[in-house]
Image (cartoon, helix red, strand yellow):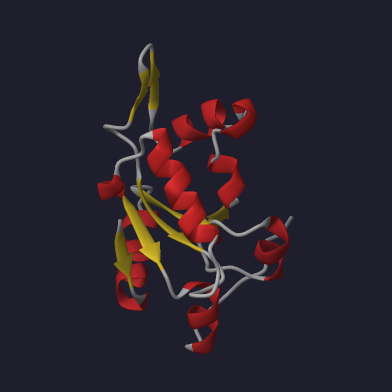
Length: 133
């Protein structure tokens, strides 16, 4: 997994998210997401990617990210690139989401991590939005 800063994140938003070639994942719990997020982000809490207890969401979620279910597991050849973020350096929700994705077989090369998270994004004065629920 590669860590990115604000400039790389903005480039990813412009070149990948806006053209549907990538996804920006807010891995925080919904209560944090509702308070505000980075524009273009979708909220997929870190716990959703867990295989624990026969997670029923995995079979619905991974195809939305471009993975194909095969008889032997998952094919991630056409899976989307993503940037995952959380609250900031003190928060582990993004790391847990990435660990869970890797356990599912999602390619490390397709996952980027914005370590600064919402804390740095807001401190630097970038735009945030409150999602309509």
